[in-house]
Length: 491
Ligand SMILES: [Zn+2]
Image 1 (cartoon, protein in one colour):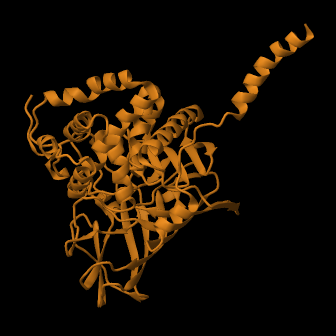
Image 2 (cartoon, protein in one colour; image 1 turned 90 degrees about the vertical axis):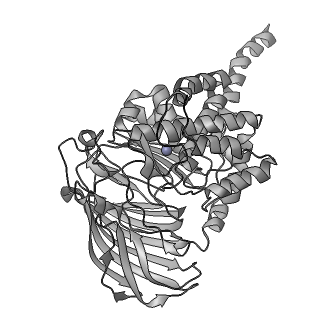
């Protein structure tokens, strides 16, 4: 009797012990040594910034150390200064017919990058803007920049945020500096890329850099960034963060006094959410961990040591940066499947944009359609194949029933509106990959893992995607892909 009772008592106790010590699934993350190896030899960008909320601005000193990998000598360096596009309503990417009032709730508001000084190799230089929007900053290199030569450039400037619900703007006391720091334009086929800042899509094309950022803000502000800070200190009413972010295509920051932070650690990975409502942040964190775990199993390890989710005011769902995703207040408030899909989409961009770079101006499908297909794969693994099929029928299949004048494989300049872009590039693009996966008997995710390994921290062209697919599968899927990408489809 005594013995039997012991057994009865021990079953729940054993179950509890098992639950406590059962290994929790963890997202696979590149080890610090693997990341350091990948980052070795990349150009570096050092930023010292002071955030000044009273004037919606940031004072910045930025040093770039850049090695010329071009085959030919160059006589200028071209930097992308996207913040200047916000100077006038004529050039603002937020000035769209459909969304102007949602981006600028109080009407147009000015934002800018005010350059105070530029020096190349320690010598002050006279800068020149090559476009009306002043997003193409050209610095002369008097002696010429030879192949294999390292150039050091120092900029001093102020960033001013517009009062706007934008990835570059302040609204609802959330200050967002997205695509704010000047980065070199991509040098391609013997020339600098000079694409305009299109209002549709994410027209930000860049290589990877090692960022070292020190940022100061008035005490009381929280800071969400592309990497978790290595150090933080508060003194004399100011908080200083030191942030090291290796191998990133961009570096973004968001500040708010209203942010509440939730943190989870899983092995080497720190996952954080900065939201005004803590329970919304916790829900987003749950989905973020699931997404990182699912994608690291499907496509290979997540590249960075931290993953951060931050709330911002925005009329669409979200925006991706390396190591950081921004989610709109509306998506966070909606929660449930709406939030889970948004997190799964933006998290997938860590593989299809941050890790494997592509040209988001000429081939936006290459990161957007892949991210949407990843969402369908996530739903299939997390919620069952039937759930993913239902999601596909409901959200993606209707895109096949509409005739449109652009194509899924078109460049950004072809799309008249966000809705046209979303139907063709996200939905029809994902339908293309769904069809491809069926032709490959469910083998597309296996190919995407291979594609990620082949192009990690590099840029994959459309031809790279096609050729790698043909080599990996031994099949010719071009007819299907060309049909979706380059043909105006009629139902
Ligand atoms: Zn996206």
